[in-house]
Length: 499
Image (cartoon, rainbow, N blue to C red; front, side, top):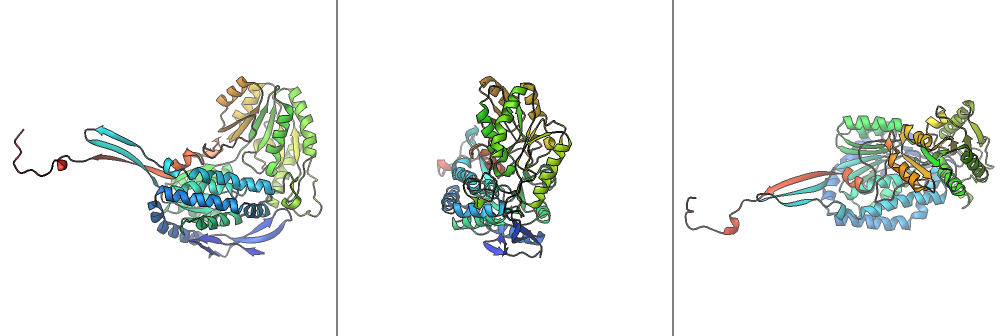
Protein backbone atom coordinates (compact mmCIF):
# COMPACT_ATOMS: atom_id res chain seq x y z
CA UNK A 1 0.00 0.00 0.00
CA UNK A 2 1.30 3.41 -1.01
CA UNK A 3 1.55 6.39 1.33
CA UNK A 4 0.62 9.61 -0.42
CA UNK A 5 1.66 13.09 0.71
CA UNK A 6 0.88 16.77 0.61
CA UNK A 7 2.83 18.93 -1.85
CA UNK A 8 4.07 22.03 -0.03
CA UNK A 9 6.66 24.51 -1.28
CA UNK A 10 7.91 22.15 -3.96
CA UNK A 11 8.31 19.15 -1.66
CA UNK A 12 6.32 16.02 -0.87
CA UNK A 13 5.60 16.16 2.85
CA UNK A 14 3.80 13.74 5.13
CA UNK A 15 2.03 16.32 7.29
CA UNK A 16 1.77 16.54 11.05
CA UNK A 17 -1.81 15.56 11.92
CA UNK A 18 -1.26 11.80 12.17
CA UNK A 19 -4.66 11.29 10.49
CA UNK A 20 -5.12 9.41 7.22
CA UNK A 21 -7.88 8.38 4.81
CA UNK A 22 -7.96 5.22 2.73
CA UNK A 23 -7.83 5.50 -1.06
CA UNK A 24 -9.63 2.59 -2.72
CA UNK A 25 -9.43 0.83 -6.04
CA UNK A 26 -13.17 1.06 -6.82
CA UNK A 27 -13.02 -1.92 -9.18
CA UNK A 28 -11.75 -4.34 -6.52
CA UNK A 29 -12.81 -2.66 -3.29
CA UNK A 30 -9.23 -2.90 -2.02
CA UNK A 31 -7.37 -0.13 -0.23
CA UNK A 32 -4.48 0.81 -2.52
CA UNK A 33 -3.11 3.87 -0.73
CA UNK A 34 -3.61 6.15 2.20
CA UNK A 35 -3.55 9.92 2.11
CA UNK A 36 -2.67 12.26 4.99
CA UNK A 37 -5.39 14.60 6.23
CA UNK A 38 -4.08 18.06 6.97
CA UNK A 39 -4.72 20.06 10.10
CA UNK A 40 -4.69 23.84 10.47
CA UNK A 41 -0.92 23.82 11.07
CA UNK A 42 -0.24 21.97 7.81
CA UNK A 43 -2.40 24.44 5.92
CA UNK A 44 -0.67 27.38 7.59
CA UNK A 45 2.70 26.05 6.45
CA UNK A 46 1.44 26.03 2.85
CA UNK A 47 -0.10 29.48 3.19
CA UNK A 48 3.14 30.96 4.50
CA UNK A 49 5.06 29.50 1.57
CA UNK A 50 2.44 30.83 -0.85
CA UNK A 51 2.45 34.26 0.75
CA UNK A 52 6.24 34.46 0.51
CA UNK A 53 6.39 33.32 -3.13
CA UNK A 54 3.42 35.23 -4.57
CA UNK A 55 4.77 38.82 -4.80
CA UNK A 56 7.69 37.80 -7.02
CA UNK A 57 5.38 35.72 -9.22
CA UNK A 58 2.92 38.62 -9.53
CA UNK A 59 5.83 40.82 -10.67
CA UNK A 60 6.54 38.44 -13.58
CA UNK A 61 4.94 39.91 -16.68
CA UNK A 62 1.81 38.16 -18.02
CA UNK A 63 3.54 36.96 -21.16
CA UNK A 64 6.15 35.03 -19.17
CA UNK A 65 3.48 33.61 -16.88
CA UNK A 66 1.61 32.47 -20.00
CA UNK A 67 4.74 30.69 -21.23
CA UNK A 68 4.61 28.46 -18.16
CA UNK A 69 1.09 27.51 -19.24
CA UNK A 70 2.36 26.79 -22.77
CA UNK A 71 4.94 24.38 -21.40
CA UNK A 72 2.39 22.84 -19.04
CA UNK A 73 0.15 22.04 -22.02
CA UNK A 74 3.06 20.22 -23.67
CA UNK A 75 3.68 18.22 -20.50
CA UNK A 76 0.01 17.29 -20.19
CA UNK A 77 0.10 15.88 -23.73
CA UNK A 78 3.33 14.04 -22.93
CA UNK A 79 1.91 12.44 -19.78
CA UNK A 80 -1.72 12.02 -20.91
CA UNK A 81 -1.71 8.22 -20.70
CA UNK A 82 0.06 8.24 -17.33
CA UNK A 83 -2.41 10.76 -15.89
CA UNK A 84 -5.42 8.89 -17.28
CA UNK A 85 -4.27 5.58 -15.82
CA UNK A 86 -3.69 7.09 -12.38
CA UNK A 87 -7.08 8.78 -12.53
CA UNK A 88 -8.89 5.60 -13.56
CA UNK A 89 -7.15 3.57 -10.89
CA UNK A 90 -8.49 5.77 -8.08
CA UNK A 91 -11.77 7.02 -9.54
CA UNK A 92 -12.88 3.99 -11.55
CA UNK A 93 -13.87 5.73 -14.81
CA UNK A 94 -12.77 4.24 -18.12
CA UNK A 95 -9.46 5.29 -19.67
CA UNK A 96 -11.08 7.29 -22.52
CA UNK A 97 -13.25 9.06 -19.97
CA UNK A 98 -10.23 9.75 -17.77
CA UNK A 99 -8.28 11.16 -20.72
CA UNK A 100 -11.28 13.38 -21.46
CA UNK A 101 -11.14 14.61 -17.87
CA UNK A 102 -7.54 15.73 -18.44
CA UNK A 103 -8.33 17.13 -21.90
CA UNK A 104 -11.13 19.43 -20.72
CA UNK A 105 -8.81 20.83 -18.07
CA UNK A 106 -6.05 21.23 -20.64
CA UNK A 107 -8.37 23.33 -22.81
CA UNK A 108 -8.80 25.84 -19.98
CA UNK A 109 -5.01 26.00 -19.62
CA UNK A 110 -4.81 26.75 -23.35
CA UNK A 111 -7.27 29.60 -22.89
CA UNK A 112 -5.10 30.96 -20.06
CA UNK A 113 -2.19 31.33 -22.48
CA UNK A 114 -4.09 34.42 -23.64
CA UNK A 115 -3.50 36.12 -20.28
CA UNK A 116 -1.60 39.11 -21.76
CA UNK A 117 -4.74 40.06 -23.68
CA UNK A 118 -7.20 39.09 -20.95
CA UNK A 119 -5.40 41.08 -18.25
CA UNK A 120 -5.22 44.31 -20.25
CA UNK A 121 -6.79 47.25 -18.46
CA UNK A 122 -8.64 50.25 -19.86
CA UNK A 123 -7.45 53.79 -20.59
CA UNK A 124 -9.24 57.09 -21.11
CA UNK A 125 -7.20 59.94 -22.50
CA UNK A 126 -8.41 63.39 -21.50
CA UNK A 127 -11.05 62.29 -18.99
CA UNK A 128 -10.88 65.86 -17.66
CA UNK A 129 -8.66 68.94 -18.09
CA UNK A 130 -5.20 67.39 -18.19
CA UNK A 131 -6.54 64.22 -16.55
CA UNK A 132 -6.06 60.65 -17.74
CA UNK A 133 -7.75 57.60 -16.19
CA UNK A 134 -6.74 53.99 -16.42
CA UNK A 135 -7.59 50.68 -14.76
CA UNK A 136 -5.39 47.74 -13.90
CA UNK A 137 -6.25 44.13 -13.11
CA UNK A 138 -4.10 42.95 -10.22
CA UNK A 139 -3.93 39.55 -8.48
CA UNK A 140 -5.66 38.90 -5.18
CA UNK A 141 -2.67 37.23 -3.50
CA UNK A 142 -3.28 33.71 -2.19
CA UNK A 143 -6.30 31.77 -3.49
CA UNK A 144 -7.60 28.30 -2.67
CA UNK A 145 -9.72 25.64 -4.36
CA UNK A 146 -11.73 22.75 -2.89
CA UNK A 147 -12.45 20.23 -5.62
CA UNK A 148 -14.58 17.04 -5.92
CA UNK A 149 -13.73 13.43 -6.65
CA UNK A 150 -15.58 13.14 -9.95
CA UNK A 151 -13.19 15.28 -12.01
CA UNK A 152 -9.83 15.14 -10.22
CA UNK A 153 -7.93 16.63 -13.19
CA UNK A 154 -10.38 18.93 -14.95
CA UNK A 155 -11.82 20.94 -12.07
CA UNK A 156 -8.47 21.63 -10.34
CA UNK A 157 -7.15 22.98 -13.66
CA UNK A 158 -10.31 25.04 -14.12
CA UNK A 159 -9.37 26.78 -10.87
CA UNK A 160 -5.59 26.91 -10.55
CA UNK A 161 -4.72 27.73 -14.18
CA UNK A 162 -6.53 31.10 -14.33
CA UNK A 163 -5.66 31.91 -10.71
CA UNK A 164 -1.95 31.35 -11.28
CA UNK A 165 -1.69 33.02 -14.69
CA UNK A 166 -3.32 36.09 -13.10
CA UNK A 167 -0.39 36.25 -10.69
CA UNK A 168 -1.84 34.55 -7.62
CA UNK A 169 -0.49 31.68 -5.55
CA UNK A 170 -2.93 28.78 -5.26
CA UNK A 171 -3.58 26.12 -2.60
CA UNK A 172 -5.54 23.12 -3.85
CA UNK A 173 -7.52 20.89 -1.47
CA UNK A 174 -8.59 17.99 -3.73
CA UNK A 175 -10.90 15.15 -2.83
CA UNK A 176 -9.26 12.69 -0.47
CA UNK A 177 -10.88 9.88 -2.50
CA UNK A 178 -8.63 10.29 -5.57
CA UNK A 179 -5.73 12.64 -4.74
CA UNK A 180 -2.90 11.28 -6.90
CA UNK A 181 -3.60 13.22 -10.11
CA UNK A 182 -3.69 16.62 -8.38
CA UNK A 183 -0.28 15.85 -6.88
CA UNK A 184 1.01 14.92 -10.34
CA UNK A 185 -0.35 18.16 -11.80
CA UNK A 186 1.51 20.22 -9.20
CA UNK A 187 4.75 18.47 -10.12
CA UNK A 188 4.13 19.12 -13.83
CA UNK A 189 3.46 22.80 -13.22
CA UNK A 190 6.84 23.15 -11.54
CA UNK A 191 8.49 21.20 -14.35
CA UNK A 192 6.91 23.77 -16.68
CA UNK A 193 8.71 26.56 -14.83
CA UNK A 194 6.35 27.56 -12.01
CA UNK A 195 8.25 28.73 -8.90
CA UNK A 196 7.96 26.67 -5.74
CA UNK A 197 5.15 27.73 -3.45
CA UNK A 198 2.84 29.03 -6.17
CA UNK A 199 0.85 25.79 -6.55
CA UNK A 200 0.55 23.55 -3.50
CA UNK A 201 -1.66 20.56 -2.71
CA UNK A 202 -2.97 20.11 0.82
CA UNK A 203 -5.02 16.94 1.25
CA UNK A 204 -7.68 16.75 3.89
CA UNK A 205 -11.26 16.65 5.06
CA UNK A 206 -13.53 19.11 6.87
CA UNK A 207 -10.75 20.16 9.25
CA UNK A 208 -8.60 21.45 6.39
CA UNK A 209 -11.63 22.97 4.64
CA UNK A 210 -12.50 24.97 7.76
CA UNK A 211 -8.88 26.06 8.06
CA UNK A 212 -9.05 27.38 4.48
CA UNK A 213 -12.31 29.20 5.17
CA UNK A 214 -10.91 30.88 8.28
CA UNK A 215 -7.35 31.68 7.24
CA UNK A 216 -6.92 35.47 7.02
CA UNK A 217 -4.31 35.36 4.22
CA UNK A 218 -6.46 33.40 1.75
CA UNK A 219 -8.39 35.92 -0.35
CA UNK A 220 -10.63 33.76 -2.55
CA UNK A 221 -12.06 30.25 -2.54
CA UNK A 222 -13.49 28.11 -5.33
CA UNK A 223 -15.60 25.03 -4.59
CA UNK A 224 -17.38 22.30 -6.56
CA UNK A 225 -19.43 19.64 -4.77
CA UNK A 226 -22.86 19.07 -3.23
CA UNK A 227 -25.31 21.89 -2.62
CA UNK A 228 -25.40 21.62 1.21
CA UNK A 229 -21.60 21.90 1.41
CA UNK A 230 -21.61 24.67 -1.21
CA UNK A 231 -24.01 26.67 0.97
CA UNK A 232 -21.83 26.08 4.03
CA UNK A 233 -18.59 27.11 2.31
CA UNK A 234 -20.18 30.14 0.69
CA UNK A 235 -21.70 31.38 3.93
CA UNK A 236 -18.64 30.88 6.10
CA UNK A 237 -16.19 32.09 3.47
CA UNK A 238 -18.15 35.27 2.72
CA UNK A 239 -18.61 36.01 6.42
CA UNK A 240 -14.82 35.97 6.67
CA UNK A 241 -14.57 38.58 3.92
CA UNK A 242 -13.38 36.27 1.16
CA UNK A 243 -14.39 36.19 -2.48
CA UNK A 244 -16.18 32.84 -2.93
CA UNK A 245 -17.66 30.92 -5.85
CA UNK A 246 -19.41 27.62 -5.06
CA UNK A 247 -20.97 25.19 -7.51
CA UNK A 248 -23.40 22.65 -6.06
CA UNK A 249 -25.62 19.80 -7.10
CA UNK A 250 -27.74 19.25 -10.19
CA UNK A 251 -30.83 17.55 -11.52
CA UNK A 252 -30.56 17.96 -15.27
CA UNK A 253 -33.64 17.47 -17.45
CA UNK A 254 -33.69 16.55 -21.13
CA UNK A 255 -36.94 17.34 -22.92
CA UNK A 256 -37.77 15.12 -25.90
CA UNK A 257 -40.34 16.67 -28.23
CA UNK A 258 -42.62 14.52 -30.43
CA UNK A 259 -40.73 15.60 -33.56
CA UNK A 260 -37.31 14.60 -32.20
CA UNK A 261 -35.21 11.89 -33.82
CA UNK A 262 -35.84 9.11 -31.29
CA UNK A 263 -32.69 7.17 -32.11
CA UNK A 264 -30.60 10.31 -31.68
CA UNK A 265 -32.35 11.16 -28.42
CA UNK A 266 -31.96 7.64 -27.04
CA UNK A 267 -28.26 7.50 -27.92
CA UNK A 268 -27.77 10.89 -26.28
CA UNK A 269 -29.49 9.74 -23.09
CA UNK A 270 -27.35 6.62 -22.88
CA UNK A 271 -24.12 8.61 -22.96
CA UNK A 272 -25.37 11.47 -20.82
CA UNK A 273 -27.15 9.34 -18.26
CA UNK A 274 -24.79 6.40 -17.81
CA UNK A 275 -21.36 7.70 -18.81
CA UNK A 276 -18.91 7.84 -15.88
CA UNK A 277 -21.50 5.78 -13.94
CA UNK A 278 -23.62 8.93 -13.73
CA UNK A 279 -21.05 10.63 -11.49
CA UNK A 280 -21.16 13.96 -13.34
CA UNK A 281 -22.77 17.22 -12.27
CA UNK A 282 -23.87 17.64 -15.90
CA UNK A 283 -25.27 14.12 -16.31
CA UNK A 284 -28.81 13.89 -17.62
CA UNK A 285 -30.76 12.13 -14.87
CA UNK A 286 -34.31 13.05 -15.95
CA UNK A 287 -35.76 12.40 -19.41
CA UNK A 288 -38.99 14.28 -20.13
CA UNK A 289 -40.78 12.96 -23.23
CA UNK A 290 -43.70 15.13 -24.34
CA UNK A 291 -46.80 13.02 -24.91
CA UNK A 292 -47.58 9.39 -24.17
CA UNK A 293 -46.68 8.24 -27.67
CA UNK A 294 -43.28 9.95 -27.43
CA UNK A 295 -42.68 8.36 -24.03
CA UNK A 296 -43.59 4.87 -25.23
CA UNK A 297 -41.28 5.19 -28.25
CA UNK A 298 -38.46 6.49 -26.08
CA UNK A 299 -38.71 3.62 -23.57
CA UNK A 300 -38.78 1.17 -26.49
CA UNK A 301 -35.54 2.67 -27.83
CA UNK A 302 -33.81 2.96 -24.45
CA UNK A 303 -34.34 -0.49 -22.99
CA UNK A 304 -32.26 -2.56 -25.48
CA UNK A 305 -29.50 0.04 -25.42
CA UNK A 306 -29.34 -0.08 -21.63
CA UNK A 307 -29.42 -3.88 -21.59
CA UNK A 308 -26.40 -3.86 -23.93
CA UNK A 309 -24.25 -1.62 -21.73
CA UNK A 310 -20.97 -3.18 -20.66
CA UNK A 311 -19.96 -2.40 -17.08
CA UNK A 312 -16.43 -3.24 -15.99
CA UNK A 313 -13.06 -2.09 -14.69
CA UNK A 314 -10.95 0.39 -16.67
CA UNK A 315 -8.63 -2.50 -17.49
CA UNK A 316 -11.50 -4.35 -19.21
CA UNK A 317 -10.89 -2.99 -22.69
CA UNK A 318 -12.11 -0.19 -24.93
CA UNK A 319 -15.65 -1.57 -25.13
CA UNK A 320 -16.33 -0.97 -21.41
CA UNK A 321 -19.01 1.74 -21.20
CA UNK A 322 -18.63 2.68 -17.56
CA UNK A 323 -16.91 1.51 -14.42
CA UNK A 324 -17.63 1.39 -10.69
CA UNK A 325 -18.76 4.26 -8.53
CA UNK A 326 -16.14 5.77 -6.28
CA UNK A 327 -16.84 4.21 -2.86
CA UNK A 328 -18.93 1.58 -1.12
CA UNK A 329 -20.86 4.38 0.59
CA UNK A 330 -21.74 5.92 -2.77
CA UNK A 331 -22.98 2.54 -4.01
CA UNK A 332 -25.11 2.05 -0.90
CA UNK A 333 -26.69 5.49 -1.26
CA UNK A 334 -27.55 4.88 -4.93
CA UNK A 335 -29.18 1.52 -4.14
CA UNK A 336 -31.11 3.08 -1.26
CA UNK A 337 -32.56 5.71 -3.59
CA UNK A 338 -33.43 3.06 -6.19
CA UNK A 339 -35.35 1.11 -3.53
CA UNK A 340 -37.17 4.30 -2.58
CA UNK A 341 -38.23 4.77 -6.20
CA UNK A 342 -39.75 1.30 -6.27
CA UNK A 343 -41.44 1.82 -2.90
CA UNK A 344 -42.89 5.16 -4.00
CA UNK A 345 -44.48 3.69 -7.12
CA UNK A 346 -42.14 4.32 -10.03
CA UNK A 347 -41.92 1.60 -12.68
CA UNK A 348 -38.44 0.04 -12.74
CA UNK A 349 -38.07 -0.89 -16.41
CA UNK A 350 -34.41 -1.92 -16.14
CA UNK A 351 -33.38 -3.30 -12.75
CA UNK A 352 -29.63 -3.51 -12.17
CA UNK A 353 -29.72 -4.07 -8.41
CA UNK A 354 -28.48 -7.63 -8.70
CA UNK A 355 -25.57 -6.74 -10.95
CA UNK A 356 -22.37 -8.57 -10.11
CA UNK A 357 -19.15 -8.80 -12.06
CA UNK A 358 -17.27 -12.09 -11.91
CA UNK A 359 -13.88 -11.60 -10.33
CA UNK A 360 -14.82 -8.14 -9.05
CA UNK A 361 -17.53 -9.04 -6.57
CA UNK A 362 -16.07 -6.67 -3.96
CA UNK A 363 -15.89 -3.73 -6.37
CA UNK A 364 -18.26 -0.78 -6.20
CA UNK A 365 -20.15 -1.58 -9.39
CA UNK A 366 -23.78 -0.52 -9.86
CA UNK A 367 -25.78 -1.89 -12.76
CA UNK A 368 -27.75 0.46 -15.03
CA UNK A 369 -31.30 1.38 -14.01
CA UNK A 370 -34.22 2.92 -15.88
CA UNK A 371 -37.34 4.22 -14.17
CA UNK A 372 -40.56 5.16 -15.96
CA UNK A 373 -43.59 7.08 -14.71
CA UNK A 374 -41.60 8.99 -12.13
CA UNK A 375 -43.43 11.85 -10.43
CA UNK A 376 -42.18 15.11 -8.93
CA UNK A 377 -42.81 14.06 -5.33
CA UNK A 378 -40.50 11.02 -5.47
CA UNK A 379 -37.07 11.02 -3.85
CA UNK A 380 -35.44 9.80 -7.07
CA UNK A 381 -36.71 12.98 -8.75
CA UNK A 382 -35.98 15.44 -5.97
CA UNK A 383 -32.49 14.25 -5.04
CA UNK A 384 -29.26 14.04 -7.01
CA UNK A 385 -28.58 10.29 -7.28
CA UNK A 386 -25.09 10.58 -8.81
CA UNK A 387 -25.27 7.07 -10.20
CA UNK A 388 -26.28 5.14 -13.34
CA UNK A 389 -30.00 5.80 -12.93
CA UNK A 390 -32.24 7.50 -15.50
CA UNK A 391 -35.75 8.61 -14.58
CA UNK A 392 -38.47 9.19 -17.18
CA UNK A 393 -41.07 11.79 -16.22
CA UNK A 394 -43.89 11.92 -18.75
CA UNK A 395 -45.19 15.38 -19.68
CA UNK A 396 -48.53 16.03 -21.34
CA UNK A 397 -47.32 19.00 -23.36
CA UNK A 398 -44.38 21.36 -23.92
CA UNK A 399 -45.39 23.80 -21.17
CA UNK A 400 -45.53 21.02 -18.59
CA UNK A 401 -42.10 19.77 -19.68
CA UNK A 402 -40.65 23.28 -19.48
CA UNK A 403 -42.21 23.72 -16.04
CA UNK A 404 -40.49 20.60 -14.71
CA UNK A 405 -37.04 22.02 -15.46
CA UNK A 406 -38.00 25.47 -14.21
CA UNK A 407 -39.65 24.36 -10.96
CA UNK A 408 -36.79 22.14 -9.74
CA UNK A 409 -34.55 23.82 -7.19
CA UNK A 410 -31.42 22.85 -9.15
CA UNK A 411 -30.50 24.71 -12.31
CA UNK A 412 -27.18 23.45 -13.63
CA UNK A 413 -27.88 22.19 -17.14
CA UNK A 414 -30.78 21.16 -19.35
CA UNK A 415 -31.40 20.11 -22.94
CA UNK A 416 -34.15 19.89 -25.53
CA UNK A 417 -34.23 17.50 -28.48
CA UNK A 418 -36.41 18.74 -31.32
CA UNK A 419 -36.45 19.61 -35.03
CA UNK A 420 -38.54 22.71 -34.29
CA UNK A 421 -36.41 25.85 -34.19
CA UNK A 422 -39.21 27.88 -32.60
CA UNK A 423 -39.57 25.44 -29.70
CA UNK A 424 -35.80 25.31 -29.19
CA UNK A 425 -35.51 29.10 -29.25
CA UNK A 426 -38.39 29.52 -26.79
CA UNK A 427 -36.91 26.90 -24.47
CA UNK A 428 -33.45 28.50 -24.45
CA UNK A 429 -34.95 31.92 -23.80
CA UNK A 430 -37.35 31.01 -21.00
CA UNK A 431 -35.81 28.19 -18.98
CA UNK A 432 -34.17 29.35 -15.74
CA UNK A 433 -31.11 27.09 -16.03
CA UNK A 434 -27.51 28.15 -16.58
CA UNK A 435 -26.37 25.88 -19.42
CA UNK A 436 -28.67 24.87 -22.29
CA UNK A 437 -28.27 22.16 -24.91
CA UNK A 438 -30.24 22.11 -28.15
CA UNK A 439 -29.90 18.58 -29.50
CA UNK A 440 -26.78 18.44 -27.29
CA UNK A 441 -27.27 16.35 -24.13
CA UNK A 442 -24.38 17.65 -21.98
CA UNK A 443 -23.96 21.35 -22.78
CA UNK A 444 -20.64 21.99 -21.07
CA UNK A 445 -19.29 25.21 -22.61
CA UNK A 446 -15.85 25.31 -24.17
CA UNK A 447 -13.05 27.00 -22.27
CA UNK A 448 -13.52 30.46 -23.78
CA UNK A 449 -17.12 30.64 -22.51
CA UNK A 450 -18.06 30.29 -18.85
CA UNK A 451 -19.42 27.33 -16.90
CA UNK A 452 -22.08 27.82 -14.25
CA UNK A 453 -25.61 26.97 -13.22
CA UNK A 454 -28.48 28.90 -11.69
CA UNK A 455 -30.66 28.53 -8.59
CA UNK A 456 -29.29 26.18 -5.92
CA UNK A 457 -26.63 24.86 -8.28
CA UNK A 458 -24.47 27.94 -7.72
CA UNK A 459 -23.56 30.40 -4.99
CA UNK A 460 -21.70 33.48 -6.13
CA UNK A 461 -21.95 35.85 -9.07
CA UNK A 462 -19.10 34.74 -11.33
CA UNK A 463 -18.78 31.49 -13.28
CA UNK A 464 -15.85 29.16 -13.83
CA UNK A 465 -13.32 29.53 -16.68
CA UNK A 466 -13.67 31.87 -19.61
CA UNK A 467 -13.62 35.65 -19.01
CA UNK A 468 -15.31 35.29 -15.60
CA UNK A 469 -12.28 33.45 -14.20
CA UNK A 470 -10.02 36.41 -14.92
CA UNK A 471 -12.49 38.68 -13.14
CA UNK A 472 -12.76 36.35 -10.15
CA UNK A 473 -9.01 36.02 -9.61
CA UNK A 474 -8.16 39.72 -9.98
CA UNK A 475 -9.10 43.05 -8.44
CA UNK A 476 -9.59 46.18 -10.51
CA UNK A 477 -7.61 49.25 -9.51
CA UNK A 478 -8.47 52.56 -11.17
CA UNK A 479 -5.96 55.43 -11.37
CA UNK A 480 -6.81 59.08 -12.01
CA UNK A 481 -3.67 61.04 -13.02
CA UNK A 482 -2.96 64.69 -13.65
CA UNK A 483 0.56 65.97 -14.28
CA UNK A 484 1.40 69.60 -13.49
CA UNK A 485 2.32 71.71 -16.51
CA UNK A 486 5.37 73.93 -16.82
CA UNK A 487 8.27 71.52 -16.70
CA UNK A 488 8.21 71.11 -20.47
CA UNK A 489 8.66 74.91 -20.89
CA UNK A 490 12.13 74.82 -19.38
CA UNK A 491 13.70 77.31 -16.99
CA UNK A 492 12.41 80.91 -16.58
CA UNK A 493 14.89 83.78 -16.16
CA UNK A 494 12.47 86.57 -15.45
CA UNK A 495 9.50 87.19 -13.28
CA UNK A 496 6.24 86.13 -14.87
CA UNK A 497 3.99 89.13 -15.40
CA UNK A 498 0.79 89.16 -13.39
CA UNK A 499 -2.32 87.99 -15.28
